[in-house]
Length: 268
Image (cartoon, rainbow, N blue to C red; front, side, top):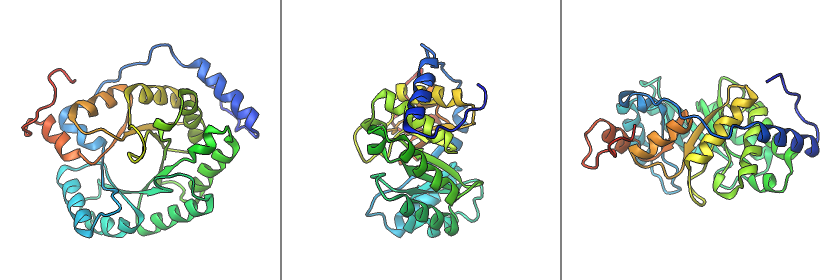
């Protein structure tokens, strides 16, 4: 696709989103999955409980280092401890949630949270989109919200934008994916895991197809309810490049045959 001009009104956004929707394939591709021994590098090992203790974060980071996960994902107050814990594991980065889990925080507050996380050493940000505004068709406001966070913590910090897909229609998921990618998101992500159902294969496949039409290199993260090796492989086949889960250790154990509940035969 030729380079797209960023829309300057809700109407222009609506026209772009509609055009891209019409360009989506009728059947989504099935992607080749990595070898079981490589799936760890697709996992964001997650601990986002409000009650998480320092000991919980230490355990999370120890597991992430042991299994060489892509990242740990924590709240802002735990970023410094996670960064310290992972100093000897440079391949495992620290992600921090922003505007979590509601997404309705003021943009300036989100920007500050993102900047604070980056200054503490987070190299990835998982920001919740203002999905109520998205549902209202306030595309300019949604774009500005994502863009300001992107500008507040510029590359090489990675930005993942959480759409909260369980609260959106298919058209709204497409809209959120388009706006996020155009605003500079490195990933569009399905869910917080705190509201409604989590990721599903159809949404992941549609999100992947949508961002590929834009050609900006945006990827997809599937999160929320991904608890087994079978779930994980399904999401990777649908086009996810990252998996957010608190069950990363069990997933790897299932894939490597070290778990009493093995992955479903034929899951690959």
